[in-house]
Length: 311
Ligand code: 13P
Ligand code: SF4
Image 1 (cartoon, rainbow, N blue to C red):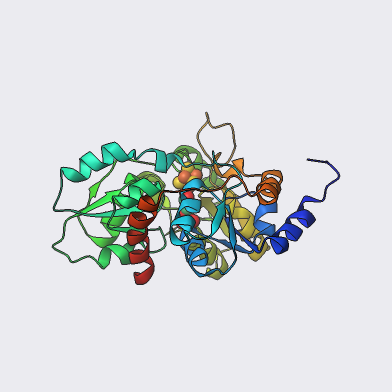
Image 2 (image 1 turned 135 degrees about the vertical axis):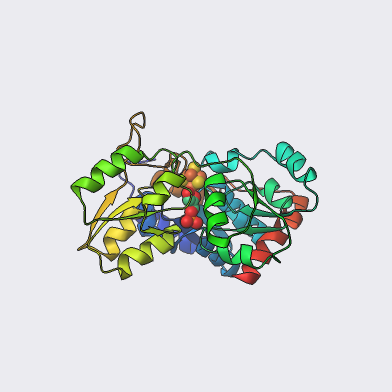
């Protein structure tokens, strides 16, 4: 790409020319968040994807999010700036093994966290996100046994919150497992007034230290509405960009990750594969595009629509 090209201006032009909408997750780099038409958590972005009348959806997020948008909109073109923008949590649930697991428990209903592949969604009864998981679980009759996959940390947290005894798949997110509890407690000693807030993909010891636990949009809402002035934020550091914009006078500190993590804060390497340049190129050449078989779209749509009808 020509260095002199004003990528932001070019992207705006392409958006109009191609009747495209840019949906971005809070973990994207700041410049991408700022150029997006809609910024949100997984649930809000899935809802936006369901409502848009644009011909093309450009998904500045990770692969499973773009797949979800495609499943809801099979007739639309869905672009992802880098197809390698995957998710360690989605990868921790391979379809063949998961199929065996659910076949061993045929009386269980299968609830999957939206952070899973389209193929896993075809094996699910209903999906959820961290924004609506409690509501989705509570919509299932109390005597109905449940499999919850793929995130064991979110699963354990939800068992506590709902009192439901769910069978968990052993998956996890490498970003949220990279936080160091020792470093976090040291940091908190230096900032005793700071409130620790965390995403429920984090491990149990960290969640025990948190005064508030929620999805990215719930964390954002909390720092806006809470009277506190200082927060230690235990989720991917990209969210701090939007938080700083919305509460410029509050002190926001990213939770520290463990020593072998090269970044001082936790960044999702997959999310950060998308760059402004790749966003421009994917809109210009309408590639890479998310392509799914008709069968995957048909079977994958049911659990997503069931979720959207409830929340
Ligand atoms: P949210 O739905 O809370 O935005 O989470 C998405 C995600 O990938 C968390 O790691
Ligand atoms: Fe997946 Fe974790 Fe990255 Fe979220 S932060 S996209 S769960 S690897």
